[in-house]
Length: 222
Image (cartoon, rainbow, N blue to C red; front, side, top):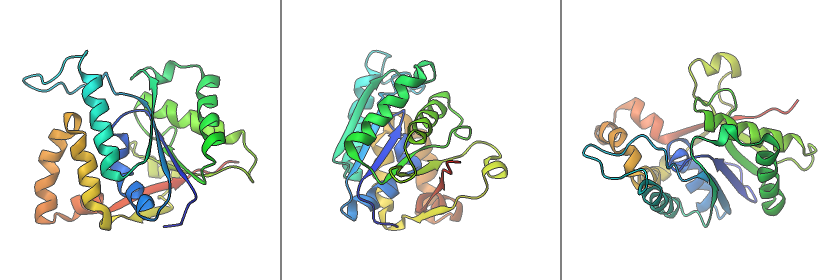
């Protein structure tokens, strides 16, 4: 993995970072690289309230905020930014405003690598809007001052359109940190973990591949 000067991760929801990036974040932190995670919302519209319910719409933001703090601790993120937007409304925010939010972060932090969702290939409207804002912001910069942009893509058939990922990180050395990041978001990951943890324990190849490999597409600005 390339040594970076500063990594900026931008996602809309607590737990977005845990699934496909937490091993990479942990690896950058282990290498001494500063990592800033800008989480746009507190995921207050998360669907999982439990059965029987463990939360209400009023209490869920506080629960998810605490989970996000615990996940950041698991990955050793030192700079966690809670950006104060509302869950499921990112797509309705003004495009210029969202672009400026990203530009302000880049101006302050001067990252050499930015990680977000690949617009058009990340399914959820908030994911798509976040990826669009990041691409729009970085498009404003000259090639010389523009950080590398790594994107996550996972919509159906995405590889037919964008090809195979050009960056694959072996994060097997950080599997425990990745598990801890997902466990931190237990309000939203409990059902997934109930399925995956037995598979990790007995070594199901597909489950271990998901745990140990993180895939990115380097965004090409034309």
